[in-house]
Image (cartoon, rainbow, N blue to C red; front, top):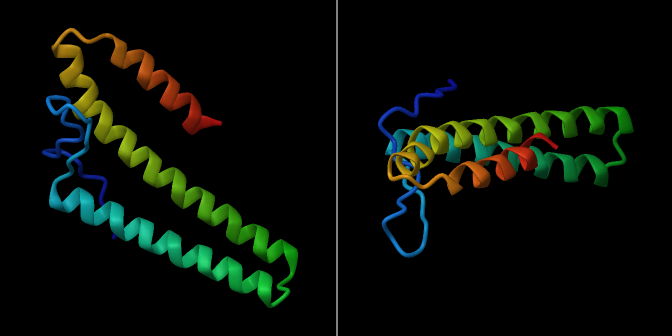
Length: 109
């Protein structure tokens, strides 16, 4: 039950002295569910290593965890672009584009 609905969520609140994010309850629940599944997958990987599971099987699970993390990153990036970046651009803060490009470069490495 994957939901990528992030409409209505406000990602970052630039009006505070410390930048923070705020997600509506549905978006936060979605992110937390995904992260909990990933956490379980990582615990499973540790168990596989402890049990000397065949390397190819472990590597396939590593790929699965990486894919799940990319999904979380994509969801957060979409939220950030639709709220924080848009708001800061409307306020005339073009530095947000440089920040966004640096973040995107880190995500696609």
